[in-house]
Length: 215
Image (cartoon, rainbow, N blue to C red; front, side):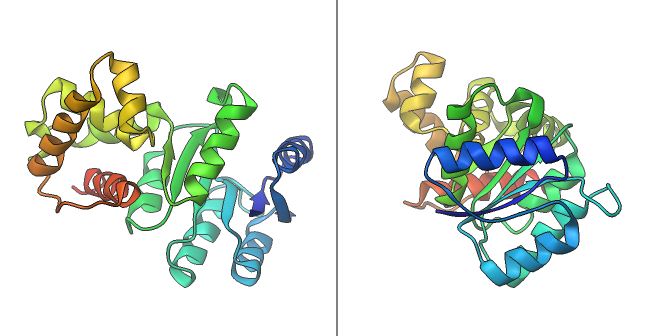
């Protein structure tokens, strides 16, 4: 699996390279600024991009803007964003098109290698890997909007866990309920959000995230 990595701090970039390679990923490119990231993504078309939000030269949103530009040119390009903070504007922009794998992790909340590698693989496969704090803020932003406000507290819990990319089995284990109960909650969620039925779980989760971004 080919990865384009963007991180301006040498030690962190080198550490990520070694970690990804240890788990069998191929580093197609490792860059430290926005323009190089844009060129690498468009030229190499990797299986997944792992991108720091703030890169030179501006140290504002160079990384995300490069990733968004690449996604416009390569629809569905999987992007996993790493950030120091929950920045809702960036998360909303990333989720706006509702297509392809997306992830948003907070650097200081990635606690072990397996957690990070699982997120990279999930996003590369077209799924989601959203930090719970990011999801909570997106949900809180729109909690009073209909039909999101029609969800029960339990349905909101299920929705948050779905947005993190968890399977029904994982959700059932976390909430200590049966998988049948999770399936029922999921069905209710999509009905209340007026989302069409789909057998593609990853796209369904992305559709929910895109819906949460409206307003």
